Amino acid sequence: MKKILAEKIGHLVKEKTRLEEALHLRISNRGKEFHLEGDPLDEYEAEQVINAVNFGFKMDIALLIKEKELSFNVLSIKNYTKRKDMSVIKARIIGTEGKTLRTLEQLTDCFFEVHNNEVGIIGHPERMKVAQEAVVNLIRGSKQANVYKFLEKHQIKPVIDLGLK
Image (cartoon, rainbow, N blue to C red; front, side, top):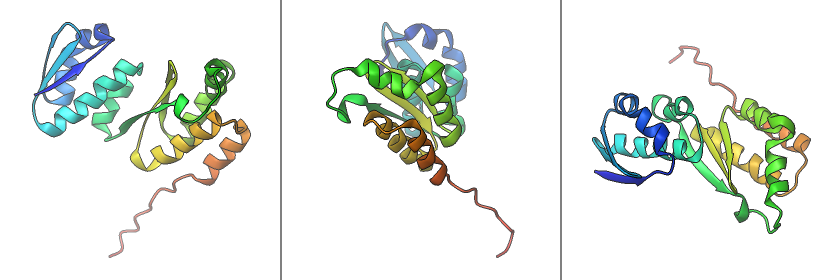
């Protein structure tokens, strides 16, 4: 049995039955505490999904963690810069009308969310490292065009199975 504290309980309570079916476990809550009962692997994945929803991701995207075996990671902006004006750094990451975030999502096949002084990323573990490095480069002041070139250079090529043994 695992216990999780959640801030955004409204979304979780509304979608409780959907979460229980998708995550294959029993969820009970008392106030902001959520108790998860089930297989330990399912509990871990459910914790990741609830943390993603709590961070600000939509429920459908957070459930991809379980369905497609994605991982959820949070980067703190303060760990990578000494600057005090966090709004400027967050604006660099988001871009004009969200264009930078959309481009990052297309180039990395990951989902991004900016909340307070943190950036949340949901994606495949192989692509997560490149996505994190791109965000860190933006935080440290690299131009968006240079980050896009970096991402294009480090695209993961799909493995083609020719059926040969």
